[in-house]
Image (tube, rainbow, N blue to C red; front, side, top):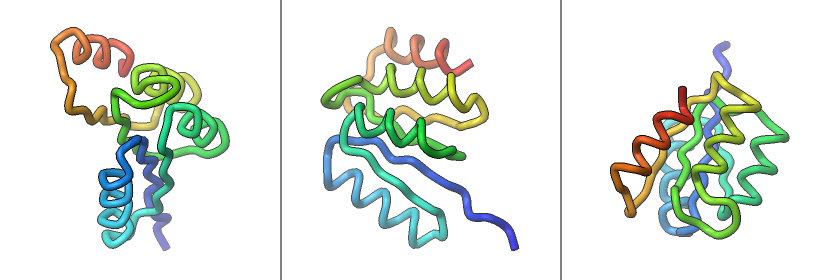
Length: 99
């Protein structure tokens, strides 16, 4: 039996976080969620994830810090940055961290 992929959702907007989690669970994924950067860092230290969906702007450590921490502890984890505040500089910085 194939193990279900584990996904971490990091977003301070409850509707976004809960909606994504519900949709992904319905599709058969194992989902964990965090509402701020501190909770995300704790979850990333305590478990391995196949994918992380990370909001860029949130309370505590921001999405770039969370992305960096995830990639340092688990380089094989895919990270997708989600934000309503995108800029070219942030996009370039995210790509540089993701390599």
